[in-house]
Length: 252
Image (cartoon, rainbow, N blue to C red; front, side, top):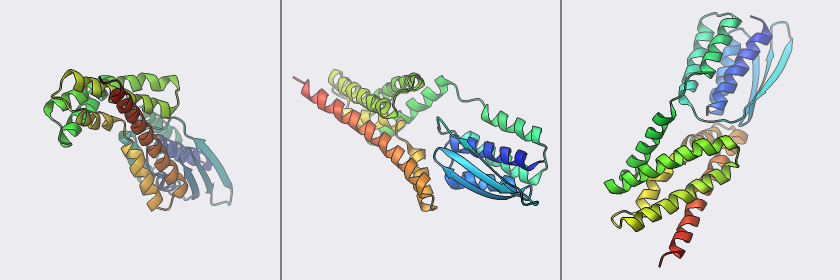
């Protein structure tokens, strides 16, 4: 396999990993593993928004390329597939076309359907509301609100709004809906409902990865991910705070 083909495979693998929420060190290790399979010296720089790789072959020829990542999310299944692919690539020789075909298959791997994801979101809110001392009724209310919020976020995110406003208004709706639910049914607690419903909005994986990157010494990528996670948390908190302020003000 030619050097430029190995470089393309390594970059594509790194891009898929980064796009689906992998840590910086995992992206760089995967790229280095793929290059090492063909005895190529590799230098890799990974940021939150892209990957740059430079390889040096046995003849002393150096090639450098980069790929930018847009619309990053979290998909642990694709990360696992790329991890398996990179190990197989190193152990078993495969040609360029076969490797490209496998990468395209990973990138186009089917996602869970919207109803399944909504069901998972509602179950998450239900369980966390119970976990934080909510009643069964609070948990049902939190699950119902999370269904609406998840569906709304799924549609609104495609319109290209600022991320801060998406999470702010989601938090605001959760707060107002919880206040309304408590007003209609006094046995409900708006605090427990809010606690359960916001769990589907909190960026657990980006926050954890940001801290891990900082610990591993990847400060640029780590602080970027950590800052993005804190921005989301702030937006959700501000939205809920605004709802509680407005809801308290309109009470008789």
